[in-house]
Length: 444
Image (tube, rainbow, N blue to C red; front, side):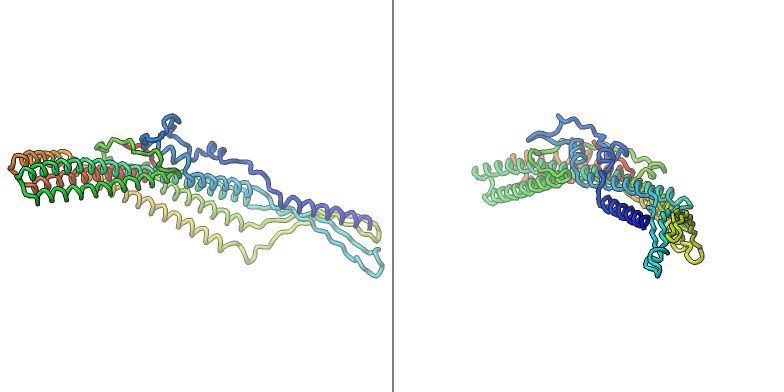
């Protein structure tokens, strides 16, 4: 019985130790900063100097906006934590199953008291065969690669969205400038009409028309200011900031023609959507191999010590457990994994085809916009400017009526707005095209 008591004491201590350590929480051996350095995820490659950050009432450049978004965007930080979580899965995949302790006591309350008591203490360990641990690790590593690729894709998406929102601010700012010029022209025309009405050269009705046009121009100017303010708010949300100190953006809008080169295969494969699909195929392959490894049976070995109280004899006990693979060969999971692997391959081809189609569509749109910009800048805008100058001069001399001047003013304003919208749309197409092939550039 002394042996039995010692066994029970050791067993109780082992259980207590297991209970106390089970709930403990170890410190994670990797940090967010380690992940940035190790995986080069979301590294700020813009290298914007701190002294170039916008102070109060200064302008904001596209490069500065990108830098602020990379440093302060919370979705990017969340993506890094997602990558961090995969490190834990890799660690877990390499671990063996815990051994088991089995304690048996027989004939404890027999007719002869404790003389016939038999006690046995065994420790058993499952040994996984077929490369299960190695294959689980490969699956966990493939999942981590996907998390990294998703973080990199998110980085491109965030910078692309910043660029597009920045273009919205540029468009609103340039339109505001056109509205201000149009308002100045309307004030000049109203002043001329008012002077002619006082001199009795035109009717009071014509002066009222000029005043109405001035009021309408002032109203559209107010709406343009509101649109400009709203666009700045949307841009500042990308880094969780406010529009305080953001008076305007620094961007010289000019038509820089981008050669429409035919994209090659490597350019298509660089797209984050394609790379992510490729990694999904790799993950599906690793999962299929894992299911095949699971089909191989695991053995369990045990080693123990047995004591007979009747004759005080001791004996060692060795055991081996081998499952019989008769019914469950994991055939269902293997079939499912193989099917999902084929599905991933089909999705990869679909992603590549979609990307090629989108790139071709963008090229067509860019060519159309390029022709329109050239036509507006070289033909339409100079002609409209000359017409307005001639109409104003002719009106002062009495050769034209007020409606001629008003039509010329309206036409020039609409043409200038159309040119701004077309040039901005051309910039947007460049940004979207770069995004599709996994590039982020500071456009000019």
